[in-house]
Length: 340
Length: 279
Ligand SMILES: Cc1ncc(C[n+]2csc(CCOP(=O)(O)OP(=O)(O)O)c2C)c(N)n1
Ligand SMILES: [Mg+2]
Image (cartoon, rainbow over all chains, first blue to last red; front, side):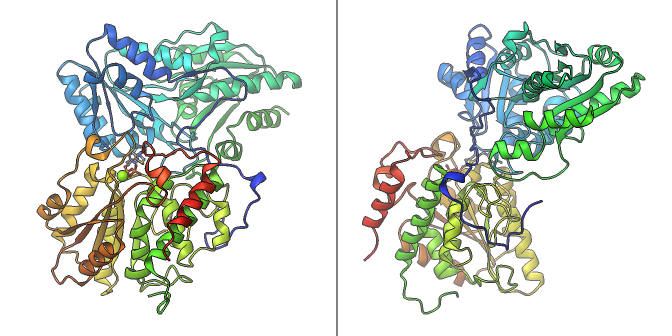
């Protein structure tokens, strides 16, 4: 509940202040290894052997790691200014002329402002445009204007569009390469800046449309995407102490869903299915998985860890992740509650 | 007019707005202080010369509406609202902290005096069009001001609203463009040039002026002209401003959208402001 704007607030002592995470949101837990700008570096590298790749942004190159590409390939970079609609239309135009445009902005502005342009100019024609967007879900404390809590709900209804929600730097790198090879429009949620590396210890390889079982466990099956896979892996480890065995299935491709893998894993009897996503509880991975399981006649106990159907508060990111239930500690707490 | 008869000069108001903003930046160790310092003179004229409002009743029907579409400039507007007596000065200590009324990006639900939720840039002018239409329906003589940025001139929605405002002859609309020649990736003239800006607005049917936004007298004169104009047209004042104005060592820094200030520099910035304080 938001406090009234007419009730003055007390000054806060310097030692107790929490700063609002700025545009460069760090989602890395303490001590986790990170890699810098995995998307920008991968795209710059790929562009050497893929002459069709061009990069476009709407005044957010520095904030989507596309500046790395722009520095290495200045003649293949188009600064479109803060104009997301022409960003998408122009990307469509370049694709029509045979190029492979990567268009970047924040997830909110692609999904909300430019939706019709993505729908009609890009997706309806099945054009080869890669839309890569920073600040997915709740990864900034700036409030609803920057929190893309419903981007997947918006895009899931769009035919032809492939939707990717990578978990870590490795995933971002491999997904960037895979979507370059893939023909057709793609929306990829981006983790930018210093991005944690966690999947390297799981023998992981990204493949479009494929879910991966990262961990076995007999009590709970987590199905997750994006940074929530990082979180549920941590939660699974913490829950070992409670003797709650948690399996983790990472689903980096939200659309098309890997129905086969999800169905098979969810069928294993006696396991509660918990879908965890950095997205509103409406219209995302959770509802996608639920519908899939219902259709297939798989009826396990089903729970969702997701953001509430609300406009979220501004504030420090750790505060907000706790408040809205997507921090590791909150996941652990709720699994304990649900398995009691 | 609030503080009628007050003998505090506009220059002193601008100085205090800058000081409040730097103190807020210090609280968070970051913030869009470059923008706040640049636009402080414009806000001083708006809040202490042009606007009609009641500090203790921000919902007063007879007020002029001031719409901040650039949510990241909130730090600047909070500073002006503190100086105007809408927000208590002590509260700047809460800037950007959890549950503060002063979040980093300006939102209507959080702050008295913040008319709209900004942050998704390119909304302000369109909302202003509707408020102007509404005020006219109510036979109100209030003005609607929209402070927008040079970056926002890139958004198509801004120009849809500009065309609409002229078509509907909105003479109660005054747009102020903070032209600091800066946006996220670099200089706005190099990112997506909107020049010649006043010609564009004029071609769209607006009355357009362009002034040095750090020259308080020039800004005051421009506001007076915009308010007094009898033509049935919307008005725009394009204000060329200098990022970080008033703190020379920041002005001289390689200017970016998000100016870095080292922890020890906040005190130095306050000192620099004090040095430039009007006598
Ligand atoms: C619709 C939209 N697109 C992109 C952004 C991201 N963004 C935040 S500030 C900014 C720069 C806008 O230009 P301006 O307001 O002139 O920047 P400043 O003068 O503060 O550097 C951008 C692109 C946004 N907030 N809204
Ligand atoms: Mg600017």
